[in-house]
Image 1: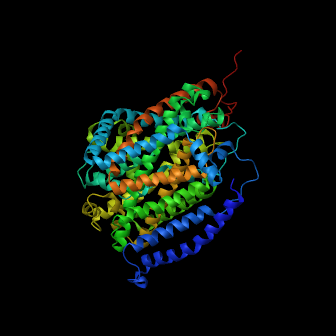
Image 2 (image 1 turned 120 degrees about the horizontal axis):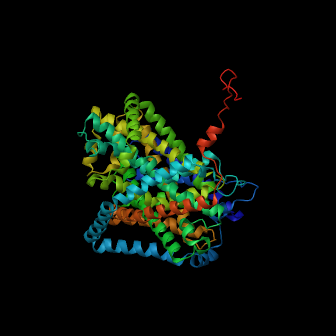
Image 3 (image 1 turned 30 degrees about the horizontal axis):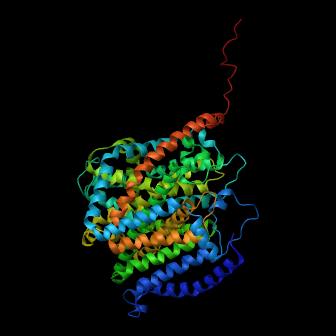
Length: 618
């Protein structure tokens, strides 16, 4: 719980942020919607600074608003994830003594070595990492495809089968969060800004260079359908199932068997709950920390390019070398403050704002976009996606599959440790069926609607010649970051859409980065202890520093490839987790009822009529 001193400081800082947000917000809104009022008063990089001040001050204020705790005692998982506030000297001492040494040292040393090699031997480092990634993606393609397909099948079984009835934490345990809050936290933590980054782009890429499986010519009507189908495939149930098969085993063993709330808990069926402090468990947690930091830092670097491209497109501002540092610094401030205030304050509130902006933006696109085209093409794509799901999932041929599908599955598995752990932490008191439905079905539905809206609109604008988005990408050296801005400029309410899009870039990234910061802090802290504010600030700044280093030194794609390599081990770990959980449930969780049996039991009894009763035997 927060001390009175911490609450007082938060209140003072919050009061300072209000006028700062109001003043910077007035300038940003005037610059967007009434540029003639501003004129030449604000020019150049000042726009970037003002925009960052507006977003960071507003989001930090939301995070720092006071929160009234419930009178009831908090759940064990809430205690573990709650941030303690301590004095400075004690905080430093705790930081040095309460970290797991291996988990603290390994990521720091690996990232330091990576950037050292990137400075000394950039070409050789990039070549070595890219060659390793290419080898893993080509050689491990069948593994990734099989792991994802089995994950989908297992999630379907949990959704419909008897084990879906299992309540995490016991039959009398109540959920810690309302369902809307639960869905909001799961969705915003797991998707990050990739939804915004690739929303207007991926379908265009598949339209310009159709997947071989589709067998359509570039730019043809068949390519439109194939582009949308493969976009749905890469962002639908297959992708989200990677999180569920990690999250459900963690939640079950943590809340039902008393295992620690850590990624290594998936090994409980093999090692036993009492042996989860072994070297194997530490290795899994360490790898999870490395994968999380690499994935988040790379995503921060990529979305910074997208945000700066938007600032440049709107105000013709050249970011230079200072721009990326300013952006990542502002974003780091937001997610550090959000994670330090905890789930109930910053993380929950910014996630809620994220969902509001997400829904508003989708409604606006539906209102001003080509609704008939989206409806017709979207319906056709969804039908093809369902019918062709199994062949798409098992299609292994060609370099295209390795470069797109296998790469995507590896990237989702590299995010699965932190997303799965966070889903597990939120799921106490939920039934397994609810966890799977939320983390796979509901999230996939929201994601696919988004990609049909943005992807369908991009394809329509490109196909009808209202804007040449592919040419705009080519002019920027093939950077996907610019794709959304010529799209919005060609639509009604383009300025409003562009403003909301820039806001979504920041808010989506903040909602994943604050969650990852908290999860990394939990994993790096010794077992049984909650992370202190010092731990969270350190890991948040460390993630931001990695992102800045990537932007200044280059090698964002190389670091991304390095993070993707961790997807291989976690694809294997997911299969181990599912196997161990199945054996445990088969042995210990009998007597549950499947959805089919429940539906049959609710059918009315059929009473036979005396006219059709068979004659009694004499």
